[in-house]
Length: 364
Image (cartoon, rainbow, N blue to C red; front, side, top):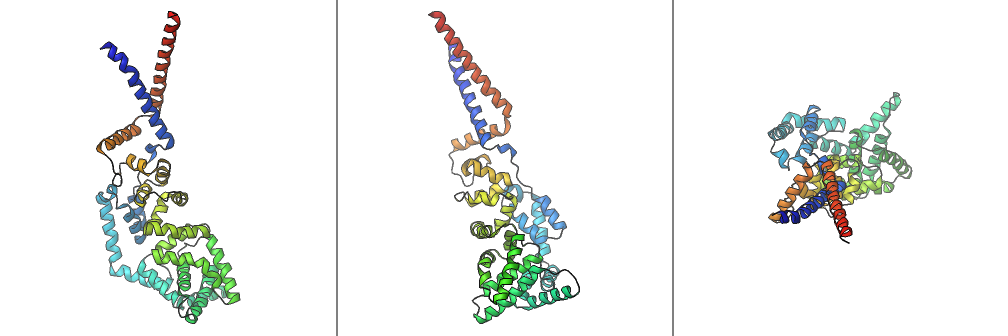
């Protein structure tokens, strides 16, 4: 028994050293103990308080696919309450007239009425009249709205002349005008609109604006108004705008909340992960920006197994059990303890080695 103990001790110590070093290396790549899933309820409640029911629905719905939210009675009740308000006649009527009279709304019915009024040139004339009145009275004039209205009138004439061929340009201009009122046009795009509108006015042609508006039209066709403007707002230049078209092709109407959860660097990181499954990336985003970083650093298979979201991972029972045990150790054993085990284990082998050397020299 004593001999067996002496024989097994180095093997056990070696296994402890190997496991400690493996856990330390895993934490060096990414420490999953820093990850926590986003609780969508506080933000949803805040959006409801601000009466932004469409945004609240979009945000909470994103998370409802995951059990930690859809099994929460409060989340289910919140979503039902939002749906009830949005479906009411009085709410929908108010949103319709909001779109017609103000040219902006956060609901689809109001957006449609606003876009239609602009598309039929009524809105362009209305906005130029308002701008002229403001200018005459010494009030501030929104140069971007004036530029878009001028482009809108030119595009309307061109649409009639071309028998509808330039209708996508006209609809994109209406989308941008809606976005300006909603505060969703980024600074770089504001400058481009004003610059291109001057060129179009001077040349009496909209050909110069078509390249800029093409991604807007593509997004609008795929995503609808709200999603388009939310994505456009996040861009810093034309290349990023084109990148949003690719992102929308991949993630559809989940693109906006994906970027919202993932933070400023998420668009770049997602581009670098073309082979990661969409479902896995969306799940990673429920951990916020660190979730996107984690799946990038660890790889999707390791990340998903560590997070115990195994629906997309084919595993044997043995491998699954090992992963569960490894993840539990990774989450519970302090880093100091792992370093201690590794150093004590190495000290043990150094001691044994020095003892062996002394015996060899003493015998000779």
